[in-house]
Length: 141
Image (cartoon, rainbow, N blue to C red; front, side, top):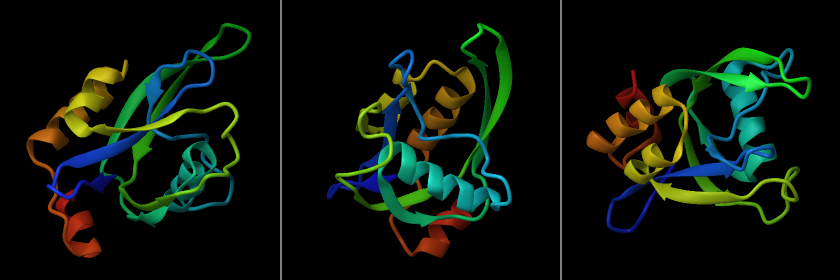
């Protein structure tokens, strides 16, 4: 997430490789990594995002991931807050992923997952203040 100069909250979304739909940067939990560290690595790999990640999840949502053989796997995604300091020009999936900043209320209209859309709508109604890192992350508890 980031704020514009007028205080508007934005979230970074990436296009899914297969469908092109807008999703949060995410991936499988990395073996041996603590969850928030795994989220930090996935944000860098999927979106080239560098910043500070909170250690507690701020939400969860479920979706069905369609595998190459057509099987659906039910996945639960934990959402960790990340204050994005910068976007790298060169990142792991830059050739297969588009990224875009969305105002949080608009992001809610762009995602297919109902639980994620609901989370984003709530976030748009009560956005955290752009304050000290600890204060921001405690807002989500």
